Length: 137
Image 1 (cartoon, rainbow, N blue to C red):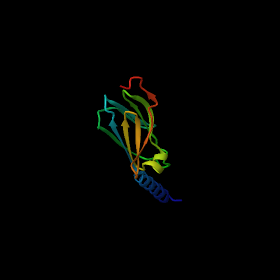
Image 2: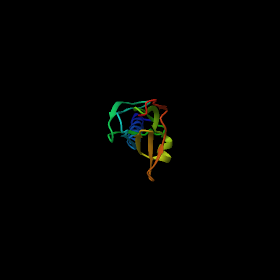
Image 3: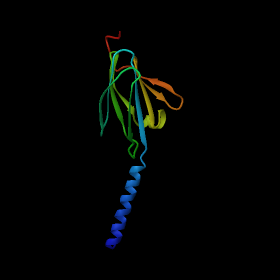
Image 4: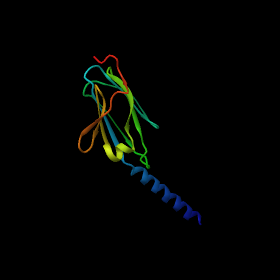
């Protein structure tokens, strides 16, 4: 194979790779604080990204977006802490992408624990706090 043909193949592969990178879908997660007393502490992260710690008052939101990897195995987790309880929860994974919320996942963090809004029917799938507080006043 000539030098020109090799360069042409390499250039074609690079363009294909760039096109595939740009074609990855973007997912959106929105954390909404519905804890009616005190502050909601949120710390979200994945294997590749740490989004830091955020404090949310009632009805405040923390939105974030990311590109889903080629195999659809991207996972994001959030640690939530309130005076009612705390815990680490998966807020985006393959199951949510395919069956629960698609590329737009809304989480309502309530006194009783986090709730995922199921799209498109808008039902809530709620989970209890993994570590309930003794001071539930």
